[in-house]
Length: 259
Image 1 (cartoon, one colour):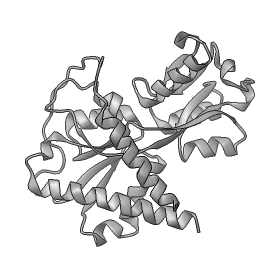
Image 2 (cartoon, rainbow, N blue to C red; image 1 turned 90 degrees about the horizontal axis):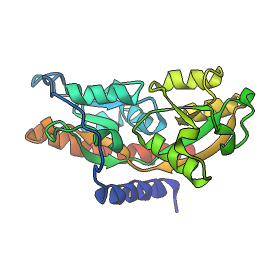
Image 3 (spheres, rainbow, N blue to C red; image 1 turned 135 degrees about the vertical axis):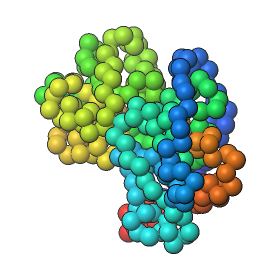
């Protein structure tokens, strides 16, 4: 089976899982939806907020290769370095579509603000330790500091790892380091003991000789649509096209990488 077909199946598996998930036990977050800062009615470009991760690079390829425009999609990518910045973008209406984490979406209290899932994306993560810290396995993380994003799929995975070996969650300090470039630099330079990183940041750390303690592919992240687009037929057509563009770009980039 071609790899891109496996990727498609993984995406739809995530979709099925999310369909049966709910925002339970989510903390209340006081929010107010600001003015629509997406460029106003005069802007025809669909604004998509993205993170510097491999899964969002698919859209960068679609834009830079001309695939998106060739399929009829006028798209503007709005880059953010951290999931917390993405949360702020959601609350202030800075884009039409966001790459977000479902657990963080659940922390938004008002239904009028909370985006809805468009396309779930399986995200590869690695747990990595600085080579100079002497941490060779998960048990070595006890009393040490792991950089991650709190209230996210990253922290959920970290807690599942800790639980699986019989340690308490409080045995490992969860350092809130939201920015991916900063988290990368901190574990590389030994300012934190370990970190959870997506690609391509994870491979860069590995190539520097640091230690891999675990890896996984998580569901629960993906592209979410702002509620302000629900009554906008033009945006709805663009959003539907965005999904097709992403899947076609995924197919093309996967085929290229396997040649």
